[in-house]
Length: 417
Image 1 (cartoon, one colour):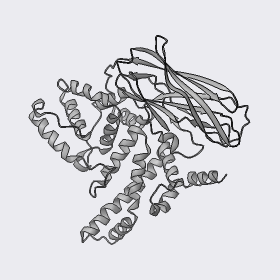
Image 2 (cartoon, helix red, strand yellow):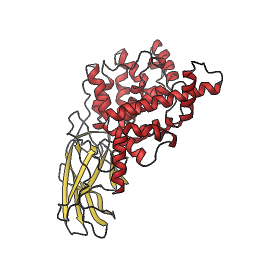
Image 3 (tube, helix red, strand yellow):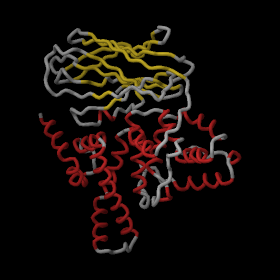
Image 4 (cartoon, rainbow, N blue to C red):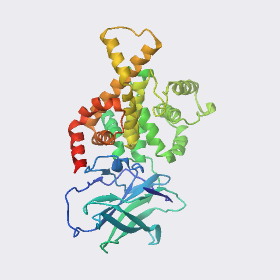
């Protein structure tokens, strides 16, 4: 994948176009299939894990965005379908243009070459040039913009064109969500249609409860992981939060203090805080566990797993799922923990305490991956991909495979064809 950085200015409102799903076609078709190209404007992760790290013949989800906000990051993903094949190879050239409301056209990709090996004609392919931009008010004015793509198949001589559009508008603070169930559902599905307005509505909802009974430090670690990852994707919102802070109601001020802590941003100046907020800021900064991507905490490992789930709900990437699989390397510790628990014996040494904590982390990771692989389509696809490509601790393969055995066996058989 080639990444092209562009500067664009844009606004993402609550109204978002329906997501599109498509899949590679496994059946052979003749070269008369119509050549097609497609463009998707999206805030989904530019890593395209949802395309490259799923099994063959799967249907990826692409969330199409129709409105963008000034300062917002976004990507433009180009795809082609039915490229002609000769001697097992394809060869294409394409250009992408941005057309402003006044009709002026700017070249974003100029006659790029896309070639390689391919067995079937009727296959959807992701082009290597992904446009990644941050919307700049200096470059864009409110109005409707178009992205156009022109494609040439150098083998068949056929051409294809497509266009998509988005609106540019100023940021307007959305209304906070109501109802705990609705808030939780939007968090769990946020990665499918990420939106700064949705994020703002979630964050300032009175029904977003950052506390959780019986959890370490009484915190909801899924929400910590979610808010950290989601606001990292929408850093243009930080100045707007700072502006809101002074006149915000106490609970919203606490949330902004909380967010600064989990984002590892500098503490808010004490002169701007009330006495009880200074104490809260100090306490919350001491309560955040280690970054789960860097090291496992023997005591707070389960909380770190929750943080990784929150991160997945925010960006839908492979990394947090793969990091959970790293906990499956504690296979020996899990066996030792099982023996201690079966004997109802308390750990007698630091080593045995580590065996107990990390053994339980193994069990927790296995259980949460199993449950969410059943419930969430993209998690199941990531698990299948990891098993198919050996991207999982070897000791865990035996336990992990039965979780998604049917799908995994189908993938293996497909790969033999």
